[in-house]
Image 1 (cartoon, rainbow, N blue to C red):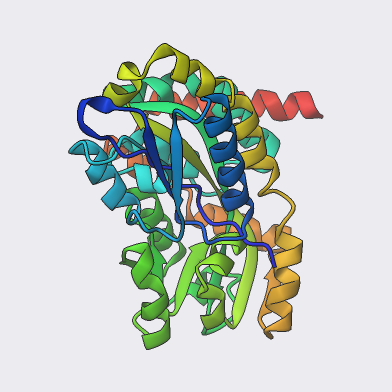
Image 2: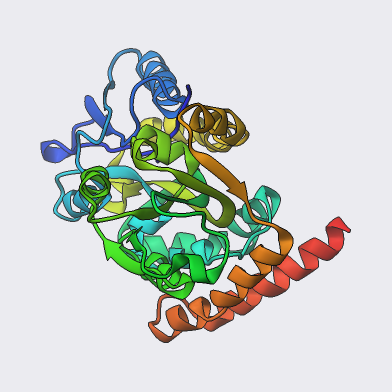
Amino acid sequence: MRALVFLALSLVCVPAFAQDALKFGTLAPDNTPWSKLLQDFKKQVEEKSGGKVKVKIYLDGKQGDERAMLQKMRFGQLTGGGFSTGGMAAVVPELQLLELPFLFDDNAESDYVMDKVLLTELTQAMEKKGLFLFCWAENGWIDFGNSVRVLKTPKDFEGLKMYAQESDVSIETVKAFGATAQVLAVPEVLSALQTGLLNAFMTTPIFATGAQWFTQTKYWTDSNHTYQPAAVVFDMKFWQKLPDEQKQMMLAMKDTLQKSARINVRGLDEELFRGFKERKIEINKLTAAERGELRKKTAGVADALIAKNAFPREWYDRVQKALKDFRAGKK
């Protein structure tokens, strides 16, 4: 079974920013679309540099979780990385706007907002924190998994101990649904599910498979309530000191990498759901009425984040107007 977890690319800096040994780390296991993509990237970089630039890829989070990699970048131990927008929220809180529950209806809408509506603002927000946005990537559409009951109505969430990513948008969303938010580092979640510290979580089918969380799951709700992007970023100082030749070599791969990052994730859920069913996981899809009821429960999440200065209200209002116009255009 194919499974994709978050893209996580990291380049380690050596003294004087020598560029003869690039190290890439990823949370993705081997034999996934992202690990295969990174192997292709490694091959292209080494071939196009005439062997001058060597690339080593570390799978399965060997370089640490997202928070650890961001810390390493801050102190110059890592020079780049690929993170979920939720993971990057610790540094760039504005990215949380993209993860508001029920903000997008489909991939076309999320691509439009990320590529056309907020690209300049989010790029600048990252640059202010010393990060260069290389390209967008993708984790996918987030659902619910748990070991207690079918989750369809707000009442179903009562009493659940649900994993929340270490970001305000994740925590506020869990609370809005009515569950108790439990914030843990990603590597700790599986053992927490096994021991009962957690009994529910929000994530994509791809991540639940790759991280083995699905082995502790009895019920899955195909809710698609949140879209979670990822981003490949470099430390700005590192990027600026790269020789122009190497910059152009990697930038030439940017569009293909971003396109592949999205295409290789989309359309995998049905295959993964077949695997879930083989493990006797009960899968339920929200009806329009159920989806509407849950949407109402999370209506205040945006205001809560704006109050915390996660992102400007003007950005949120502009996204809402852009989506309204985009939907009208599709009709």
